[in-house]
Image 1: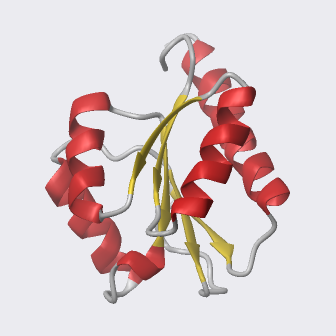
Image 2: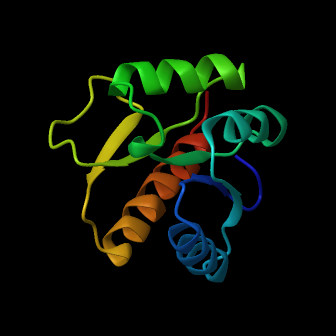
Length: 127
């Protein structure tokens, strides 16, 4: 993981992107933002963020299709994802977590911090 963790925020809502970007940067987390999956995939490929926050409503596909589409377009090892959506069931992919809409920003930010803390702890373990 980078010295400062990074999060790619993928959401059509400019307000959501701005709120998350501001809150995370105040916590020392670098952010990248995109409104579309294609642009986010390009950014993921170039910047290799530690975590992706993805609004499932960007694409009308099902959960598996969204993750597969993103991974194929990004052409990189997929980092953990926090998926924002109306789904209540946890995904089968252990690297994806669902945060159901409507959500509170405070809880979402805490979830992001927890995942980044786990990644940081895991990266310090001896091989």
